[in-house]
Length: 196
Image 1: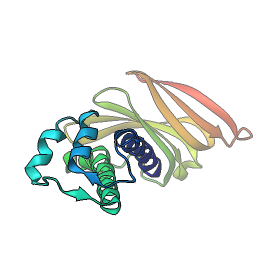
Image 2: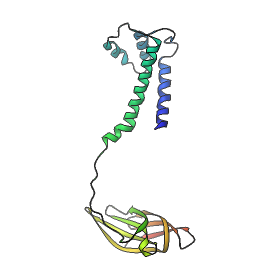
Image 3: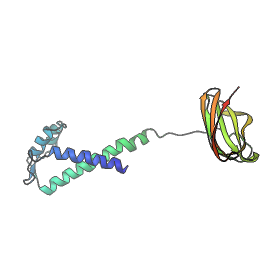
Image 4: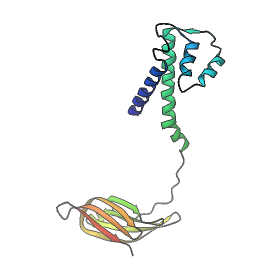
């Protein structure tokens, strides 16, 4: 967020510096609406030239302090508007609700280092350390029907303790599990699983 504000500051600072550059408006003199309109006319916001008379500013002259406050207010407004559209508006537009189905236990014991991957739209694989079975590396296939989940049998892929499990689908019938093998000097190990 801080980096975004800094970038916006740099952009708008350079923009205003260009818009009111010394050769167009002399900051040693009071700014007039005519000078501001002329400066805007030379920039890429030409439409403001038509808008400003509607505020009945006439030949109002601005002191150096008032000019600074106008520019500072415009700068703060531009940053606020940019942050709103880039950061907060998407959150407001895409806030929704989530509904959950029932919970389905895949291991009736303590489990750790759990990882899951989708095999297809109705099947997924869960790999984990089965704390109820000496922390053995274990995998199980889940089948989704509507909002219900049914599990197949548990399959041990490493008959020793494992840590830091990660599973990824290769296709609808193959997956790979990577883990730290506590039974083999904590070596990093990977294994391919085939679903039949």
